[in-house]
Length: 313
Length: 67
Image 1 (cartoon, chains in turn blue, brown):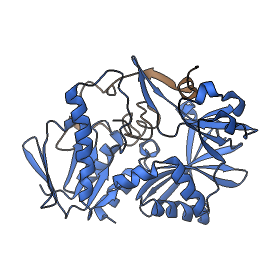
Image 2 (cartoon, chains in turn green, cyan):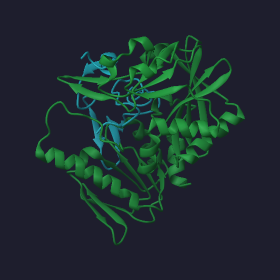
Image 3 (cartoon, chains in turn blue, cyan):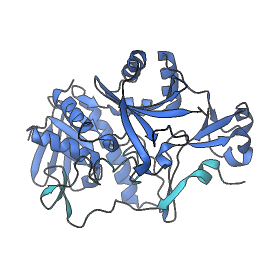
Image 4 (cartoon, chains in turn yellow, cyan):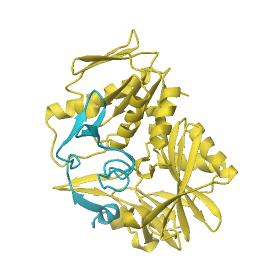
C-alpha cells in the first residue's frame, strides 16, 4: 500500500485510535507505526529514493515523497530512567530505533503534526516563555536554576515546576511531578542544589485555560471546579469535580496563540493560559499536548486532526 | 543532603509497563486501533478514549513523552 498518512505512535496511545478510526471512515490509506512493534516490522529507509518501506504482517506499507502527512506521536527526548539496567540488546534497540524515527524527517514534503525538531525546540520551557513574551503575551516572573538565594526575591507564594517532564522510577514505584505552590523560604541549598528547577511567581485568583490549536482551528476551554477557578494544579483535583467549558478568547489573545505556533513552527499546540483579574497570562505550550481528555460529542479534536492530516495543509 | 524538593513533592504510583486492558481487548495492527468484541474499544467518552491520558494516571507527562 502507498501510504498517504503515516502515524508514528504507540499501541497505548488511545487518543490516536480516534484519529485512525476517522481516517478509516474516510477511506484514507494510512499506516500506524507503533513503537512496540519495531522488532516485528521489517523496515527500510531507502535514502536514494526517499522511501520508507515497512513490512507488517506480510503487508508492505510505503511512505514516499508523495505521502501527504505524518502524525508524530513519539518523544523527541529519551526521558525515562529505568530502575533496572537495560540489557545490551535493549540499549541498542532503544537508541537505534529513536535514530530511525528521527530519520523520518527526510520526508520534508509531508505536512507534519509536528516535525520532531520543532517539537524539540518548543519543549524547552525557557525558550517558549521568551518567544511568548516577545509576541506580546504576559508571562509570570520566572527564574530557573539551583541557587536558592536567588529565589528569595519572590516575596509572595511561588510555583515550583520541573524544567522538563519528570518520570522517575524507584523500585516498584514511578514518580511524576505536578506544579506545586510553595514559599521561597522553603527552598534552600540542601533541597535544590542537586538539580535545577523552575520557580515562578504564583498567580492568584486564577482560572486555567487550555487552548488547543490544530492548524487554523483554535478551541479554548476554561477548567473549573464547581464553577470556580482551581488554585492548585488542577490535575491533582478529583476529575469528577472538574468542568471544561468552551470560551471565546479575545481577538488579540487568539492572534498571539496562532503567532506563537507559527514562530515555533508547530502545526499543533496545546497552550496553557491563566486568566487572573481580567488578564490572560501565558504559562506554557505543549507541542505534544494531550487532547483526548477534552473530546466529547461536540468537541471532536480527533476529527479535526484527521481532517488536517487528510488536507495536509 | 536532604532529598531534592522535586522528588519530595513527586506523586508516587506503582509502576507498570502498560495500562491494564480489558480481557477481550485486542490491538488490530492492520486497522491500527483497539477492538473489543469486534467494535472499537476507544470512542469519545469511553474509559479508554477521552479520559485516558490527562487524568487516567497512565500519566507520562503531556502525552507519550516517555521512552
